[in-house]
Amino acid sequence: MLTYMLDGKKRASSGSLTSGPSEVQRRVDAGRQFRDAVTGVFNAKRPALVLLRRQTM
Image (cartoon, rainbow, N blue to C red):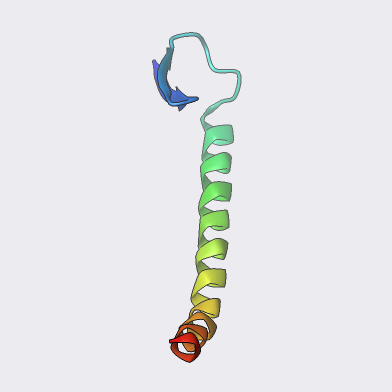
């Protein structure tokens, strides 16, 4: 059984999955790569944001 959230409601699916475990793993890996990239952007901009905040205080 697969459980997931959709529009804030918990759903459950007992039907067969059209995508196999390898497809799910590929999507998980892509999501983690995206998260790491976004984290890298925020970490790169952090010094500039700190400087801007100090200048406006």
